[in-house]
Length: 362
Image (cartoon, rainbow, N blue to C red; front, side, top):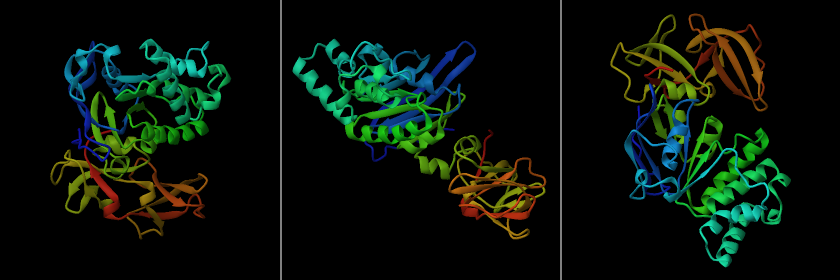
């Protein structure tokens, strides 16, 4: 299910993809994908392995030839152009830096190939090195840099040519967790400073949610939803998106007035989202995020159960509650530590406004 994509404050539409399909034998990697990416937007393509996100990125770059559909960038038909003629750049996961060249030579390489005047090359290289904070590393070789610094060199080399669109394929996967978190902030800052549309492919939910203005979640070659991170988290279009984006509690049941009738648990409240839900009696799921629940004494909440486990994550605690008749433990997140003990009888409560009723499957 593709949610309509509307231009955001980032700007007017820059990339318009329509009916894009790519097959590899019996496997359909992209299945009639429709997508709009806006000018000066940080856009993320998110999904599990094999969902089609890298094939989509490679199709935009020109390294895959779609079986049908169109890709238009700023009014130009990209599919009519070879990769080297497209007004975009692709930053590879491996960075692909020249080991024998200094930082400044790596960054200047593309401009030198275009035979630009030496003075202009020097000015543009100096400007971009200052932007990425590597002016003092200009004469060093890649092996003398940290992983995060090499990532910045690759980014500088990509943006120095001033493409209208920059494609990034898992750009932070080679970094350790601490550096990756720092570079997420850095990438977003750089994107805003250079004023170029970024499209990043990632399987990391936290990465996509923290950096992007909007994101698209793909599954089996189809776009499941396009939205801002907050909107997608709060109003997932279907069960797959709700399950893929963050932690969630999902209860299967039948649609009734006021919520969902769940076997053994009664009517659980929630509000409907998306258009994959039928009328009364239709199968659906009510989904509630762990942080939107609260624990209480038995009989005071929506469901009763027994505390299975408590885990502390430096600032919040997650309590797993076993609920009779429900296969998966119900998760409840509370601030700080909790004195709830394993084996305690508790209830889990939430408001109808904090739960969504969605269709679809995992």
